[in-house]
Image (cartoon, rainbow, N blue to C red; front, side, top):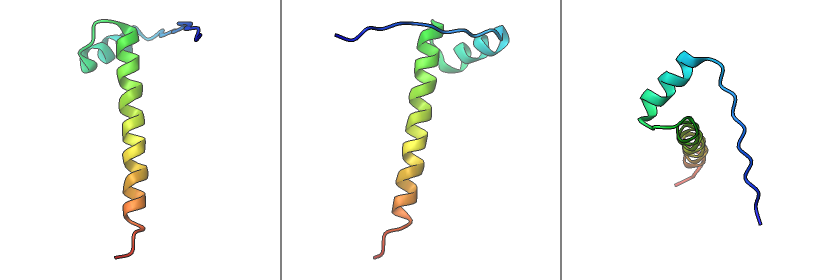
Length: 57
């Protein structure tokens, strides 16, 4: 069993509104989740690009 505790504090209302607008999501939780997923994908792509640069043909 996995417990899911939600705790999110975003004090900068302008930042939150901008995040909601850019992610085109309806909730703060969805906006943060989308942003985290995108950041993880970018980091994985950077790692992959680094590996591709080290392959000898």
